[in-house]
Length: 405
Image (cartoon, rainbow, N blue to C red; front, side, top):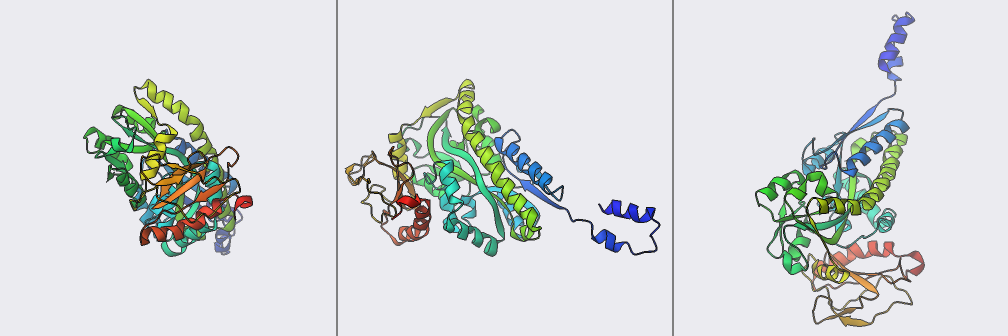
């Protein structure tokens, strides 16, 4: 536009006039360099390209997003620090890493916390999450554009079948460098090894690690089937991703550009997330054809993992208290703990069990109660009690409004 303005001035013979006003009126353009660690064949990369195209079209070229795959701009943690300084850079990251700045938000990537896209959608309207996002922006310079991107369920990929938590004992499992993931792996008896995404393949080749915990679509994209033999379907984390930019940079955008960036990110994220979940079965078959064994765990077997996944090393089958949501049909009949412990717990016929940050979270799975939630604490120390304060309001916001007491 500036070149066009200069040419127009020259053609009209107006060099005697000050053309600076004409040049100043030319619309300002903005560019976002967006980085992610995944390969170019991953569904996320296509999703980011669609997001970029939609934003450019909607802003008539005023805001462009250049997408860089395979961590071309640098390591995730380094990029996040650049973002905080106000650079025009974005990063695909997660709640666990954001928890390094605002600890409470890490629970969104906790084991067995969110299990469906519908639950993730409810989080978008939760006041507690909004407060965490505001704190990230105002105190740490990190603007969450969208967390409507779900990469699927994380499973353990190893070279031997994992049927119970005991099978993980002593194994060196790669995790991202975030406390909630590392402590979850440690609680299962494995040894967490913080390692960058791009270092996993050589790490497995050199036997620096014995396995990884990833989503299905990461495996063909990273060719991990060449160095791993077994996919163990623990589904221990539904991986919610965050698209983050600098708060200063975001605030410098015109309001209509801000809206375009956020709304098109949410739209592309939902489309990509649903595509990923549809593709999981197809990816399973692809991995089978490449020689991998698919180890499908029963619901009971997964509950054994849930009983141990607690960063405070609490007994997840302790007596429960502090119900935050209830329903007249709630059945508090007790039966033996699925992990073989002596303490009673709420009947698994009506509730499934999950453990997050020292809290036992039990969720209705009865056919007549698809949306109701119940939360209990099983804390025995001050640390767990503090987690109750931060997590309980969020879970209350996830309750179906008609059933919340």
